[in-house]
Length: 282
Image 1 (cartoon, rainbow, N blue to C red):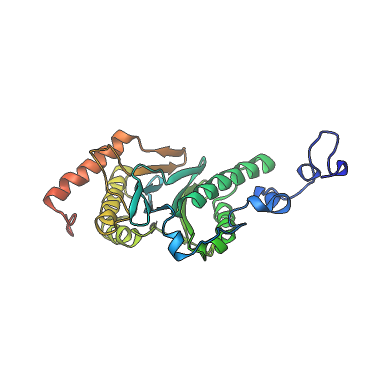
Image 2: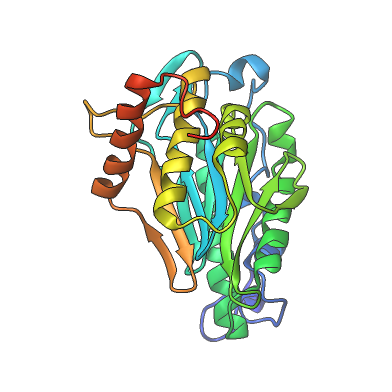
């Protein structure tokens, strides 16, 4: 870079030029090689991608005070368990969180970049990005990973947050092309999502309290683990419980381990009597 590209502060000119309040746009102009999906993995394909760590399952649901997002703790590598205590739910900012499924390394990179994007916008504009704005920004990031996704390295997030303007919790689900849809009550992603979603169809009720919803979500994750080998259930021997985050008007709060353990043990105790879970009307 020539001396003409710097001012007297020593910073590159790109750092001082006016532009939109988007960190992603800034990177696209000045460092596109660091964006997710900018390169290709040699030899990547359906076979090779199966040996790269993948994470599932994520669920989210709205309730009386806001929205809940939770995930199991297992990461798989092919037919092996790579990690049993992974974290797959992350705060994005004070009032939103991301759950990740798919290729773990790319997903975590996307989460960190999304966190920076929201921080950058708030610093430049002086106000947080709206909930719909967050959903749209995440769309751009997921779409930017489409080349990787076509090589078998997909990232499919689930975005949940409390919309301060609307005064309620909201959920946005995504596909590998970046297309997103707002989910009215609950949503799930990952290989165990079909089983978790089926459980929530029977257990979910609008306006549930936080403790009741926590139990319903743990039941859903248990059902996912019961049918999907890539999803991990509660593990009392290792002290591993689902990671659960509650998002309300007051912000994000991760459920403490003792509270998550209490809910998981209640489900495990019930499953000793009813292996297939609660019956209709019970």
